[in-house]
Length: 297
Ligand SMILES: [Zn+2]
Image 1: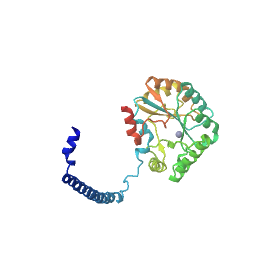
Image 2: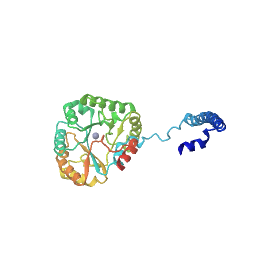
Image 3: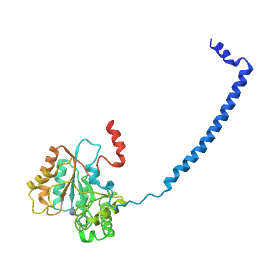
Image 4: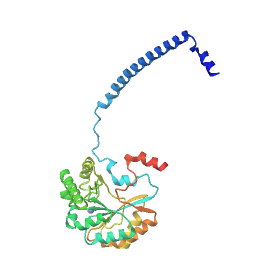
């Protein structure tokens, strides 16, 4: 049956064979022509595409820091996790008086935190800086001097302090530091140095640094010698957002900060917060698609 059909298909006579041959030649010619045409077209398309690329982009009009490197903003708006996340941060150390007490509590509760260290304090207490690192916490940059007048005088003075601390952290840890800076006094645009700080945010960004303020605190720098109960109350009052970056201090005078820490951790756990270091934010803008894809899975 199949053989019959093949014969019927025209292999049994010379004319159809010639017809098939002609058809193939025409087809080959048509393809060759078509390909040539495409090549030509794609060349033209490329030339058209190249024009807008070569046009220079207009310079940004407002010389303010982009939110891109604002790690507080990134942490607060983080997607990719259903949990409430708390980033405990301790500024102005390390000290040999308060830092060890804070480290003991963090170890007891299995909590990791971020320490915004002063370069001058790392030089004074390098072993304590090393202990913070060895116990799994993040060492971040709070400038060398904390002296507003010297620090915020010029962009050069500001960046020189930042780089100096970075080198000290590198020396203590033996690792490349996470590039995160907290402005002494906060990075907001207010006060005598507010405008300077906005310009320095641009410098930080150009040099690949994040910066971060806070959106919750225990009030240990708000004046007076606050009791542990008062610090807990202030914490409860300010821990209102889903993701919080908590400002605290491990400077030498902040004894009650260490005293209040167990109750603060217990309170925040009770509110459903998980604790993380500031380099463990579960979402960064540049990996948004990856995170969303994995969420769907
Ligand atoms: Zn400070």
